[in-house]
Every structure is written in C-alpha cells, then in structure tokens.
Image (cartoon, rainbow, N blue to C red; front, side, top):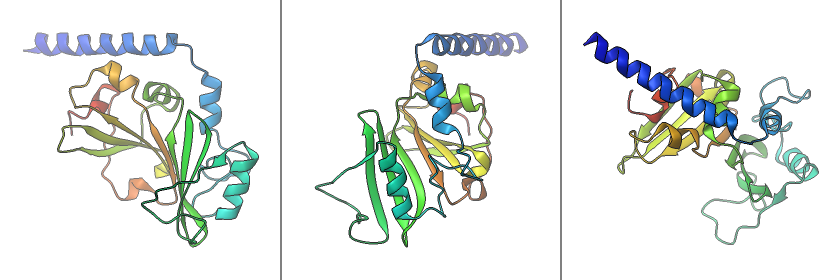
Length: 205
C-alpha cells in the first residue's frame, strides 16, 4: 500500500514539475504580469492601478482608467443598473481585446474591481503569487469546478472555472483567471483551505 501511495505521489509530483516547466518555457511577458499585481506607491493597501475599493470614488476611478487607456463600454442590453444613471451599479471598461474590467459601485464609491478578461493564465498567476492564503468555491450541477484563490489578506481573489474536477493539470494551468479586488475581506467569510497546485482541480475538499 505504501509503495502504491509513494508511486502515486511521485507520478503527480513529476507531472506537476513537467507542467510547470512547460509554463515557464512559454513566451509570456512576466514583467507585464508583475506590474498588473504591483501595488502603486499611492496605495497603502492592495489596489488596482490606484483604485482602492471602499475608498476611491466613481469619478476618481473613471479618471484613472481613462488616463491609462481604458475606454468605457456602452452596453445596449443591461441586466443591472449602469453608473450613468445611478450612484449604485456597475460600469464596464476595456483596454484591448484581452482586457476587460467591471467596477461595482455603491453610493458613488467603488466597492469591487472585477477584471473579467486578462492576457494571463492561472499557471502564470500561481508562479508569481504562489500558494494562496485560502480557497473557496463549489462544483455546480454540471460538474464544473468554480473556485477562487484568495491573496493579500483576503482583498484579492483569483477566480477560475474547470470543466470538471478530473480536468488535467494542463487545463488547470491554462485556465483563464478572473481577478477581483474587493473592499470586503473574503477570508473573513469563508473557511480556510490551503492546497497544492494539483488540488486546485477541486476533487478534494
């Protein structure tokens, strides 16, 4: 039994090492990724481009985003209130075909910065940020794994979706992450679960 467990652990360890090696060998701009998560000198707490959830006003956020080349999207069909109509709602911006952002505002103050699309993969983020402080999520009725990795004392969350908990490590490494900066510390409302990268598939709770 011990030999079987040992062989299994060695196999998965080798598989993970191979995947990490492949990720590192891929041509992606690590400097761009590092700058994406870097904290500006103007922020005392984790923030996105100087937008600090719970502090930055809607008007200040719009100025920051436009100054950095982000353009507001005009949505023809809205399921929620838009900033242009109310002081509470959501507003979308995009910087390119690879980057899209949604701001959640309440009483004219940004509460959540949600990065819907990035040019990065989950494996890239793991290599930069390392093991998360905690993980939360669930498996939906279709068997998909929907999870969030929490960093920066509960302020930053990295979300991703897998087809199932039996998804390959390759699929996990190349999953498209959704990044959230929030004024609510997620580690105060969810149980702690600190996994290895392989466990992020969601088969273990």
